[in-house]
Image 1 (spheres, one colour):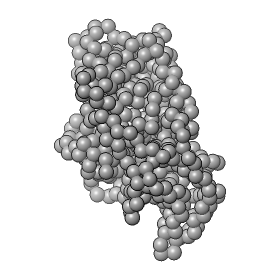
Image 2: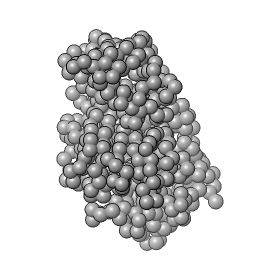
Image 3: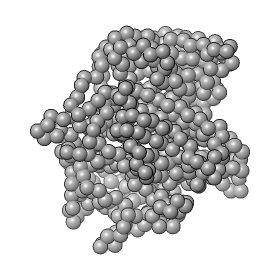
Image 4: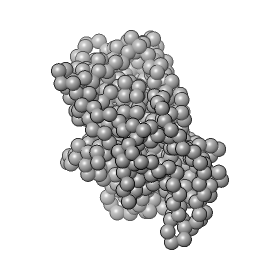
Length: 501
């Protein structure tokens, strides 16, 4: 059984002698989410997983790649990095919605004795405090997956081992240059972060003085040109802190995929953000119960976005109807401050962007691309929707996510399948049990059909990356559709990011 462990995570990102302000890391990242627009140097994001190194689909079935190596104690090492750094999330899936690989151990800073020791199933059931819900979720919460979103910081080195081979797993983490990061100890719990996660639906940023514009707009049907209604038009500098809309009718999936949110910055004639409101607020399959930390929607109330959006010379936010169907009436609320984020040494202020892509269907033997961006910035999260072209064309979910950063030849992130990347597991169990959690979810599935004992159907999913995935020159986010891109399907996606203009 697990003993009680209390946790203290404190991260200082001040470079000695230089006055450079680095990105708040670990638990500190969540303390002031108004800092999301800052793009930092000296922070790199990584992903380690059990993906098949040969390009096949043995991503954990046989355990071939379910460890980096086996150490002298006959323990299976799944993570081994020199710091300073922080693991933000790790995930496993198990047989029969359970874990059978024994104890998990965390060794910090080359210590011979692990600071964290616990049986896998007990850890994700919340038996090891302070790793409790909603920081940890088991297979009946995240539908086949066992996930931990408690930040675990390390100054010198962190090695994570398991008693036996784990099968499928992935870990998302960051490493920092010239930063002082204090290693995880048993001194403090995650009460603040737990409270933040439990308040999803409310603005997660610290309270500040904002002016709020409220009103209603009615969107007519498109007749050759998309009718566009302005929600707010501002001059001067400032930051939009939240956008909320409430349809005063019952929109269907087609409606929500053809009414576009547009954001024009600094007097630009073309919108920087031009995306359908369904995916923007978390679902590409129409209304769903989405309750993430940053965006969400409900069939009986508000859709919300709390990602900050700075502007220097002005901003205009509109809704546009691109379909021939009536768009209906919307109540809206846009809140903004009259201050552009202050300059910080070692950081640039980014503008908010969102990129929408579709391939209806993708049939070519190449990856589906969610984002291909040139420039400097940081990705916050993504929404992806998949709709099979017909019931018997299944196993699209075997496609691996791949993220290439700054022109690197090999993907920095390489996943093991759609349900794994979005923290679920086992396709039939995953598709038949939707979920919505602070940082990841699969809030809606539809059209489910049993195809020779395996369920197929449409789904929409989302994931956010704590700390943001920084890039200096470029980023390309893509995914296979099926094992080795062999399954045609209808894909659509939206990526939230910040960029340096």
